[in-house]
Amino acid sequence: MRYEIPDPLHPTLLPALIAAEDSLARLDERAGRHAVSEGFRERGQFFDAAAALWVAGELVHVEDLVLHDAHMDARAPSHELTIAHAVLRARRRLDLAEPDWALTSGGLNVLRGEGGAVTEQNLREEARRDDAASDAEDDPDENPLAAEFAELDAAIARSQRLLDTHADGANEMDSVVSPAAKARSEPMGQLGLLFEEEWDEEQRLDAWRAVLAAADQLPASLGAAILFDAWGRIEPLRRQHWLGSLLVGVYLRFRGKVSSHVLAFSTGLKTIRHERRRSKDRLTRLLAFLEAMAVTADLGMKELDRLSLAKTQMEMRIRDRRSSSNLPGLIDLVLSRPIVSTALIARHVGVTQRSALNLVRELGVREMTGRGRYRGWGVL
Image (cartoon, rainbow, N blue to C red; front, side, top):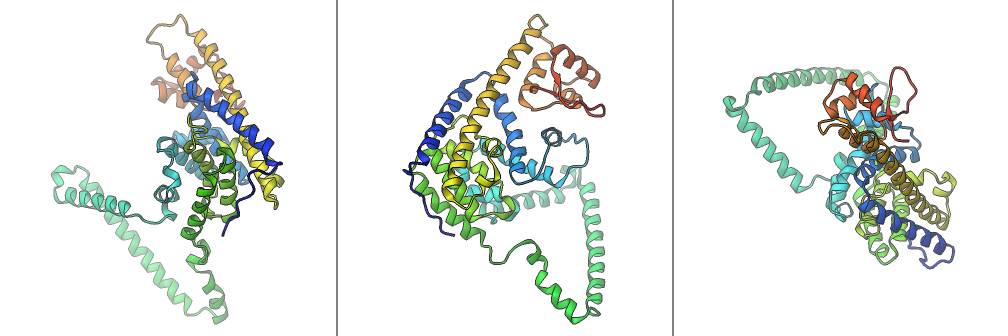
């Protein structure tokens, strides 16, 4: 699990390093003070979450992610969509946290979720919630939902008794299973199916964090590329492989290279061929990661130009509108989402879906889906 730090002065790395450093600096300068910076950051969250799944070999449509985030799914959410939404939530948490929070052991434990270690703070919070719940149950007058909670507890108890009954039946069936079949099933127990016993996440995370000290001595973009490569080689969290690409943006923000937002690194990484991203040669991988940063910065600059032009055009359409018009609120929504539906517009602006259609026509937003059953509008 030990990661060897490459030569930072390798002549092959220098051109890609210079290009990445320059592109990231220009993006940070524009994104930090641009008129559409808020919409740019929010849209980038959705695009990067979908791109992270694309890099992992899974396809998630951005419009489905937008609707799922708004609890307005057009269809039952898939497993991939659920993971993409977890990436989206993690990105938002990183955007609100301190720049170095995710690089600490406590921050990583929080991002690991259920797979992470239970910290003392989490235990204290759970204890406080339990105490509050018990106090509310002791005083039914102060808890109007006490009856509902009691019914829920009774339903849970009945379900548990039913599960115990099925478990007893399964144990009786085990007694008639042949010894050979039972021997084959024992190595594949519950833990064996989900976790590899020799896969020590804590130890691997410590090995990855050990690379941080060496990365801090290098230029920010090269240090981020090395950290991402180390994440892929060490594989600290096999069930949250996507976290490595998010930590690239976190590290660049921590170093002050891209301080305006958490870089949407996966949007550029998806443009790099798989053979280069997963090459056995480390130098080839580092070149690919540096190129991905430069591509991400270029895509971000184009996105800022596109949003700025769209904002100017939409504002020209509402120049003579009354001050109580709902169109300015629709402009903010369109600039902060990759795609919007009539239901999403209606809920955000506070109008009916028919009125939302009228607002879309007045604003002149382009229809993007081309489907009759589901229509969405946005800035291309």
